[in-house]
Image 1 (tube, helix red, strand yellow):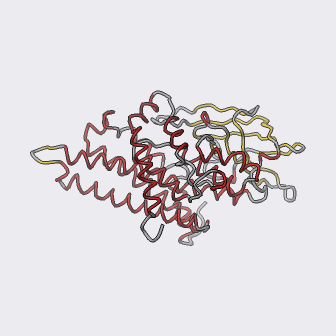
Image 2: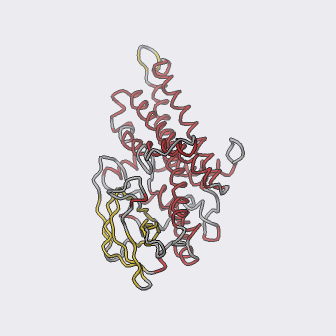
Image 3: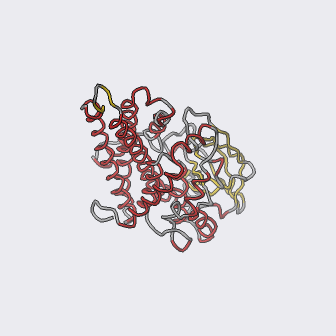
Length: 386
């Protein structure tokens, strides 16, 4: 990406992904979501075509591109009405962390599967009593000989029922200080002592949410990702891509809703003229168009900084992009529903289910309030408030 123009390659990637997603469409997605099904056909085809692995290193079968290209893929799926939440987690967080910090054996074992979409990996960090405070994580990992033994709980973990493994954030004891420090572990979902239970949600989503229960889960030494002493840096290296992907997710949904609203406003005629000719309809749609485009630009900036190796700069931009995109998507979907009137809540028009979906973006993976805390403290130099 140079300046504000995406490369020809990325634009071609967007067109190809959009064409694939349109073949399935929002009706396919909602039918699967309402009936407890999965978007496996779309995911598998996207994987075979290389779209899910665009940011996996080439030596492992991936595209060797950056997080900006993967974010573009995610955005186009969402813009076509097929938002796959696992894209934010599996190829973005998990594959990135393993590619950057995993051992040679871990890379050989997992990255080819990320590259072709045959591997799905969930990410477990949030806990019932810790919320956004990663320093209060109570899932512990204790050494037992050469093994690790994990105990604890996680909540709101997406897609565990279709994942091969979960990248779990636990805490180990520092032998020198006795304090607990973060550590990352690859936990196969068929490991004894590991259980998960679906959390009922008032969301129409093909990606379900789960609580995890780890009861004396024994893992071999090679389950530890990277260095035990550098896990905090490794963790945040995965969270920046998560925020960038979350921003792309929200931008894509906003685009989908805005396209529907604009088309309806051109076709729906009341009092002898299309409703889009009235400023009461046109101006709010124009406003959310502007907000969505601005959020998209900040997401592209965050991705460019991350791909250039500027983790701190990417952190600021990624948080801002995630915040702006979630706010824009929430306003856009609300305005799209309003533009449709009663039809906005009719299943036929494919908008009502998005009201809850975009609201998630204001809460996860980091709440809008914690983003504001970050910007106040790190961007403005204000005193820490928590």
